[in-house]
View 1 (cartoon, one colour):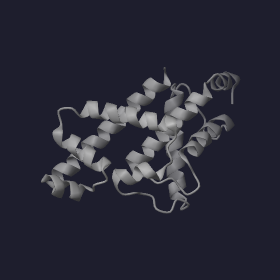
View 2: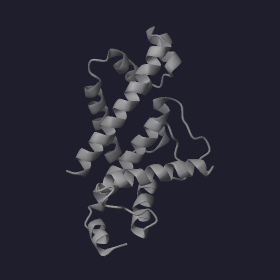
View 3: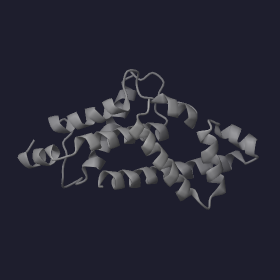
View 4: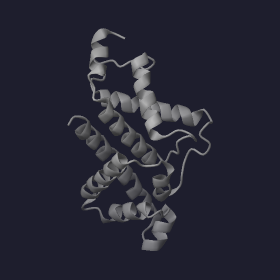
Length: 183
């Protein structure tokens, strides 16, 4: 690793980076419906990503990706996918958003991030009542078929709203990550 890159890495507020990267891992796993392998926590994934950058196992090319956070998020995504593929993870997907909230133990910072994320998603959904309904029902642990039956909405509309919600949530997560990281 070159000296310039090492200086940039050493100058980071790693406590803050670790908290935000851990929160990102939690949200990524929630929205992708991934269960972390037994024995691994979100912070373990975040620390592993940082270690891989420092050791050079995952090189950070400043010209291609000047934003360290984006690079770290990419590394965490790879680590999660590799862990899931390794077979050590057991069940890869979990059903319903309610189960996802119990899949990873939340710290106070993760709770705060989750509340902020929830508020931002709610604000971004204004004007789309079906998506709002689907979001609330998913948070309550209902499956798409149960949502359709419970609220007399066509299952296709529920699934389309789910897709819009996923895209919107990923956009909000990306925006929040950039805002929080660069404060």
